[in-house]
Length: 266
Image (cartoon, rainbow, N blue to C red; front, side, top):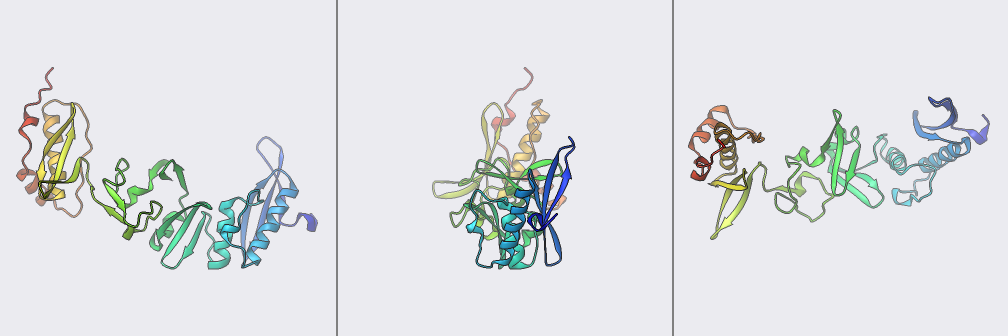
């Protein structure tokens, strides 16, 4: 191919049809730019990539549709140009943090120590929920911070600066970490209330610590299963608690007498 088709190579699809791959080499790294229906489109992508890598004045927000390059590739190339690291996902590295661009107007923020994970995991979006594919499953990214998938923002966790796209650890305040446990205030006094759903919501009890309330929930689930309730409740796992200490708290916590009165024989 001549200069008009530099950076372009033909390829064959499974059905036997021809398409064209575009690629560019920068700082001794060969970068694929994607596949195109025509050699002309592939060459435009190559030329746009070269311009982007050459012109420091071009930034991420200079991206406009239509463009020969997809937005994700645009971000990756600018990050490589400015920071010397090529990352396939649309990440731009800042000092002690990085931006993950879902599109020019939706930018997630993460701490620098999350870079390795998100450089190899593409973030997907469903409404206000963000997921990655991990071992063949869709995993909500809030799970990485100890927040349960069904937790409610504003009740179970908060973004302290009010930005729901800022996932830096210092910005996430987790209020309710355990299943069936909420922190509540009654008559000026705060306590951790445990509830379990069986024929409606039952209050298990109020407890001084979050861990006690989580263990009370586990104990209530064990009691109800022992009484013949077939429901399979997930149990709370309490980190940094030895088996001996767990058993001590398990024996200590008291449950509402109403739970003992439930009958599953019919």
